[in-house]
Picture 1 (cartoon, one colour):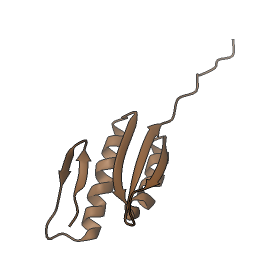
Picture 2 (tube, helix red, strand yellow):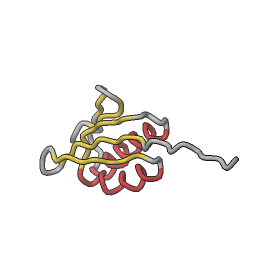
Picture 3 (cartoon, rainbow, N blue to C red):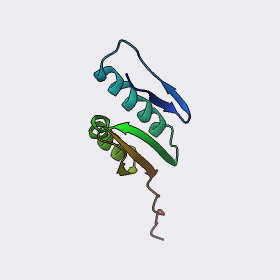
Length: 90
């Protein structure tokens, strides 16, 4: 049973649940934060969650950088892409 960070400094555990459930909560919580448009997010997540998080981050226009913390956990930093200025022909 591991602790999952939902928002900054708020972590929860789900006793009696399997790892697949934990993975769903972990990816779901990060997806909500990405959808809210936070400019920068930093979290420690499981390696399994990283595979699911990459396409979600791309879809919400975030760049993803990864640093290994331990064998099963990685530290991720998600930064929102900067928008290009819209050019108009006059």
